[in-house]
Image (tube, rainbow, N blue to C red; front, side, top):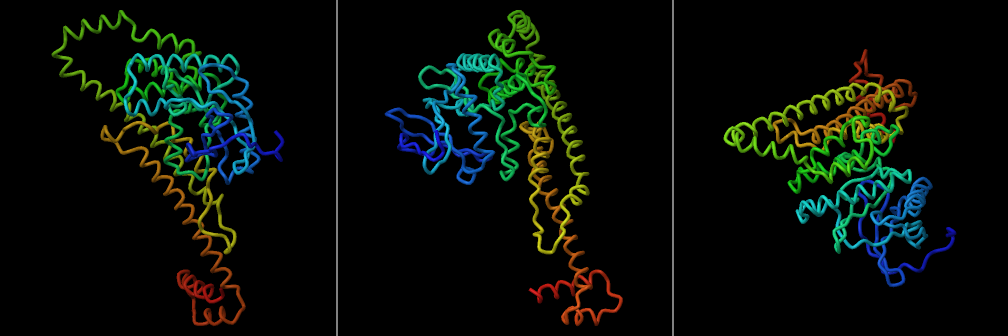
Length: 405
């Protein structure tokens, strides 16, 4: 559609959701008697060429797909007041995240949903498409028959101005190679699907797929399942029958011992795993903290007219991507310091460190200009000073600057 033309077919627009950390917002609307979902850019990004190109690319990829487990893209239009928009089919249902949080799915339904997700991903991968943004919020479970539909294909949006804690949370399901900006393939979706299984298990909805999740979520993509068909097969089989029978016999025979020792062993394993994760996080954090001198040099204040506050979005997002792989686990419950809280403190401290350097730059520039100024006020303020200290010079320079404004 030409950019000068506006669609008049979409009526009764109602806000549905606005991304807290990305570029988009969603509406429901009516189109010739049917309900649809409209995806538009936020108002302040509606004319941004890069954002518009990304939106168009998402439409082009999604519109080329035709599978019952993937939400259909119906049209790409320009709507007055919204700008460029993707029109999607409306799905009557709730996200998998909502279902898991309130516990409305049975174990059988969870299994069916995961198999549907595998079938949707299999179709994508056969068509050389990687979802890249697979998470519980992007799996819609239909109200009528409890089937899964995948939505929101594409690299997760990361607005540098968004709240860092929220960004870290949103990257929880994203494969490490995507976060690091490295090359990725279908195994990135396998990682995300494994994180979804962990999400389900951690909330006690169904723990029967945690052994599959462990294989899916290996940090190195070479150690994960090679393809989604292998994941589907593992989900369909569940726990191997022979192992379950043997385990049941052992548990019956050693019930008393298991009652005493198994919880302790599991707790120790969890604590050791958390300890390793905390140690790796601390090493990564220490490396980032040691970069402060380089950042001070990079963001050096060059003029008294510059603000002390600094926009360090590129570096803060880089830090967030490096730390996000350690976030999403409850180390605090095992007696360790809360990693998420420590990461947020680090962001604040690193920014404060940069701004302290810029304040020092400001003071240095101010004293230099004061010492070289020839106006009567500067001369009058300097005259009483005999072999002044740096602190005395700064005090008089600040007086001079205030009176010169």
